[in-house]
Amino acid sequence: MAIDKTGMAFTAALPETVAAFNSAMDDYMVFSGEPVGHLLSAAEVDPDFAMGYCLTGCLRLFGGASSVHPRVNLELRAAKARRSRVSSREQAHIDAFETAASGEICKAGMMWDAILVDYPHDMMAAKCAHESYYLVGETKRMRQSVLNILPKWDKSLPYYGFLLGMGSFGLEEAGDYREAEDMGREAVKIEPRDCWAVHGVAHVLQMEDRIDDNIAWLEETCSDWDEAVWLRGHLWWHLCLPLMESGQFDRVLKIFDEHISDCDKDMVTRLNDCTSLLWRLELKGIEVGDRWDQLVGLWVDHINDHAFAFADIHLAMTLISAGGEKKLRRFLESQHAYVEGEKSTNSAIIEKIGRKLCLGMIAFRRGEFEKVIEEIEPVRDQIYRIGGSNAQRGIFNLTLDAAREHVA
Image (cartoon, rainbow, N blue to C red; front, side, top):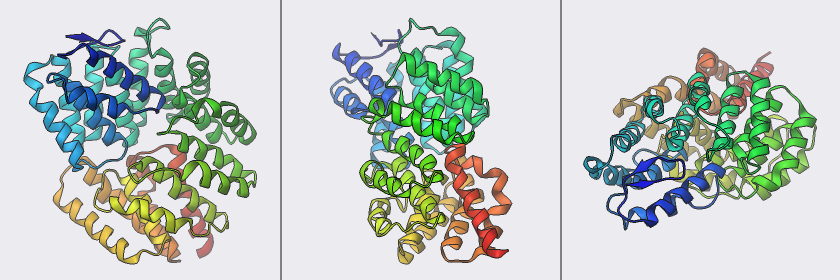
């Protein structure tokens, strides 16, 4: 058995596997580096390292990869093949990974929470539970998941500051703004590179409409998070929101070009930011040039994924905005086939909420404003279930309000 930096034992045959796992978790905390690369390089030579395949597969899922992605399937099979020779804790991780890959994201989060009952210092379980609840809008569970284990942590433990950062975001999404801001600022004092804690505070400032404070917070911290390749685009997106409210549209477009659109086709969470920002700019009456055309080329490989409703909707928004009617028809047909053939919580959310939001946003772009209201209004109280944050989901209310103005 090997021991990671938080004291958790896991099965490994080679001593260097411990360093690989610790390095991957370090990268995961700051959304930087190559956590998947660290894990795969170890797992491919260590026949007992089931946790390597388990975490790489989860990282792909949390990044927006579909459960049918060939690498996710390969990693799930590899983890399960090792299940009989690893500990009960590791088996529970593998089972949660398999559940997440089946489209039962919330249930997987609950399984990781169950691990934390016996192993409250298992940061992989804490992080996976947090990500799972975020992806399906389970705000109360996301908040409580951290608060349940926080009393069993202290500053002497590795990743304590990062746990505070997770707690900050969960509290903010649940509307506990004062405690969220205090916890987030404390987390950044402990770990200045904790971009998720920066993110939690930025959410508080956004939700409280503290425009100048929000701009100052993100500008003051950007040198600490601009190397966070997996999250920096989202934090620049957060800066753009108050900048738009203050009328700095030229700067927003510059940030989009230099810091947000510099992602690749596999960074689905960052593609969401690109789509959202362009849409918000156009709602403000700002011309975005040919940026939609550039963006659609990155999205097109995900037409058949349907990993999460949130991503599906942003893909539909991009296709209709770029004039890709043929691709849009193919996407809608694929989405219909997915919800007909896949019976999971994820497919149910896409069918009952995501599909209507897709059609509503498509209708807005086509100028069919009464149809926008017809599609979005009935599911307005359920939009949280598509995942993402309160700030991200605000785009649907903004679009609905704009449609109402056109109809009035």
